[in-house]
Each structure stands twice: as C-alpha cells, then as structure tokens.
Image 1 (cartoon, helix red, strand yellow):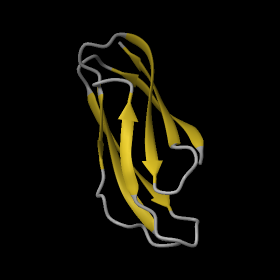
Image 2 (spheres, rainbow, N blue to C red; image 1 turned 180 degrees about the vertical axis):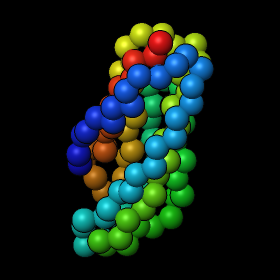
Image 3 (spheres, rainbow, N blue to C red; image 1 turned 135 degrees about the vertical axis):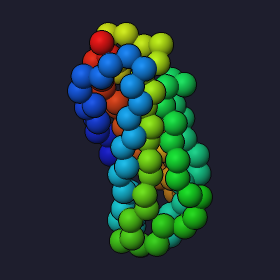
Length: 97
C-alpha cells in the first residue's frame, strides 16, 4: 500500500477543511475498506463500506478541524483494506495560526 502527505498549508485556528480523494482498486479481486485508524480527534473520515471492484475508484472524504490546535501539525490516518498486508497511510500537515 502507499504512503503520502496531504499538505493543507496555513489555516486559521478554528477553520475546518474538507478534502476528497479516490482510492483505486488495482488488484484483480474486489476490495473493501475494513476500518481506519486516526491519531487525532481533529480528523474525521467518511466512506462507504461497499466493495471496490477491480480498477474502480472509491471516494473517501477527510475532514480536518483545527479548533484547539496551534502551530505546525502533523497527523496521520490509516485505511485498512481487505487482503492488504499494510494499510494505506496518509499524513496530514497544516500550520495553524
């Protein structure tokens, strides 16, 4: 699975951002998101628990809430997919002013 960083840039304290991305199933079998892990209550993930057919895309929405945060932030979340040895990991970086 992949690891990447989503850079949100500068934010005002209390600002909330939403980011949507799509996972592609590059296997020959249907995949399902089994669950997720987040390192901060400032992140919320929204997705459907339905099969992702081979070569199809599946939308995931990540919401980041900067209330109560200050300064440089580096958070992460992981999505565990059926049959994947390692989870998909995404770091979320922001500077909260």
